[in-house]
Length: 78
Image (cartoon, rainbow, N blue to C red; front, side, top):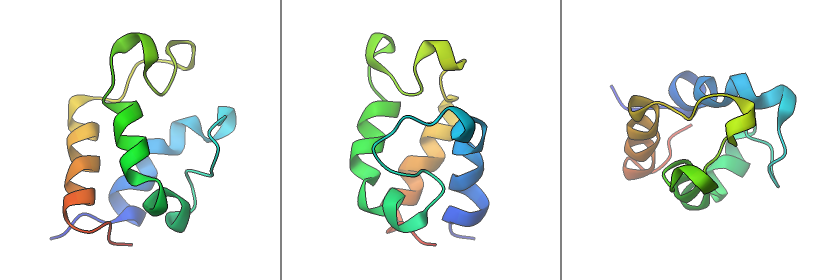
């Protein structure tokens, strides 16, 4: 079954909604799809410049990052 924004990607970002400081809304499919490569850079970057920031809690898990990369590779399905 393909990865989907609604069932696989939105839940990854849900814990950060209340403290969201991104330039776009991580709850909105169109905005996440349009910025998927940028998001991927931030969630996969070095620990000192990662998203979410350290004061927001632990980084995304390796599995969450892999799921996001799979979603991109599959064409960012809704």
